[in-house]
Image (tube, rainbow, N blue to C red; front, top):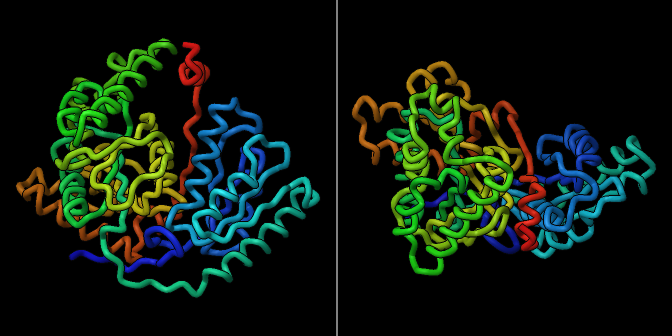
Length: 395
């Protein structure tokens, strides 16, 4: 049975990293959160984001779910939640949700602390206090079934669907066979291939929810005057050789492998451990989509790219995989797995085996290219007015 060396938690699966997360409740607190992490040391990570102080109710609920999920991620051993003071995203609510997962958590109000400098001093002290509580954690052998593996694609081209995505899909199949969870998202990229995904659903309920999510994403885009089928593939995808949305979607879904789809969850909703292949309903924006899966509990992300991407995440290591030989050469310092060997004849299963072994090594502590360069991007999906109206039933 496959194993990795992870950090055990009081509840839930093991972490593959051991961080103190500094989590701002709004954009107004994000700069302070980032400065606290910069001053506090190498084991502290901030999740600065762009969301405002007083979002509409539906948006606030999604923000709170995302921030709470980020703090509960297995890679987080403790957390400090930072607010300016007037936010409707309540720092105490977020902290209570994180504490319910057995994590030590502190809260900090910039106004109550006495302003920026005082908040920085207090924040550094709190993060060091949090770190002292988890610094003694040591890795131990854990079963691969504890892993939740999120997969993402960006900057896709013609090689993505024939090399990088199927190779990552083969790794997903290996993890699912070993009892773990694999998940992919980006619902707009199901369009044109939704009938194939529907046939793979484990039961009628999952099938109905999947098709409902695809229809909702497409109809919501139409309310905003966007024709998703007409807008895809994007100009960049077309430059990379993709010609139709069906071609792009068929390549995109191959990164999830071939196993039955056991479920579909909403954005940032908790993913099951040992759940097989489970989809998440997210937008097609790479960073927001990755953050949704990390908030759902994914400890490691695989990111496939044809034309090239440098993206990372503050809390989850991101394994970069390319099937394009030019990208493998030009962006060698950003790539972790060269899947372009498929084009020269290496079997998909063989490359998938390399991806899976990379996953287990990274889960055991090997740093990815994005981690080595501290490439850490974070953004929360922002619900638009028409999406909120549809959620309320007003549309």
